[in-house]
Image 1 (cartoon, one colour):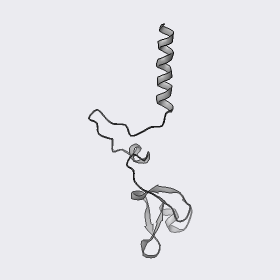
Image 2 (cartoon, helix red, strand yellow):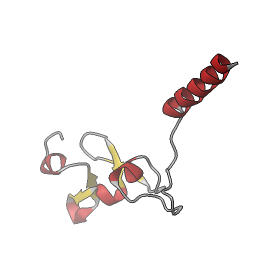
Image 3 (cartoon, helix red, strand yellow):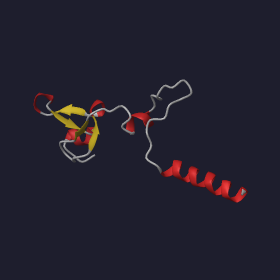
Image 4 (cartoon, one colour):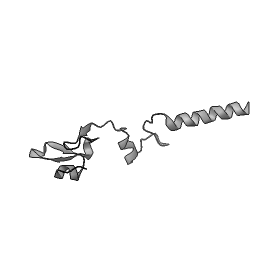
Length: 84
């Protein structure tokens, strides 16, 4: 019986480790504001494509440049014309 409970517990731990993560809440029920929450898409922010390399970045992290600041870039290197 103990082995069965142990296997069920281990299976649950493995499931939690490898299942898709959603934003985790702290004890107060608030979503942490760290970079892990932002990079996981927990904010629901729009992703934009870099005009040079095609990398998608959150809109608030994109750098503007080009004519009338209409183009979006993932890094300073891409904005300067190189690859980043």
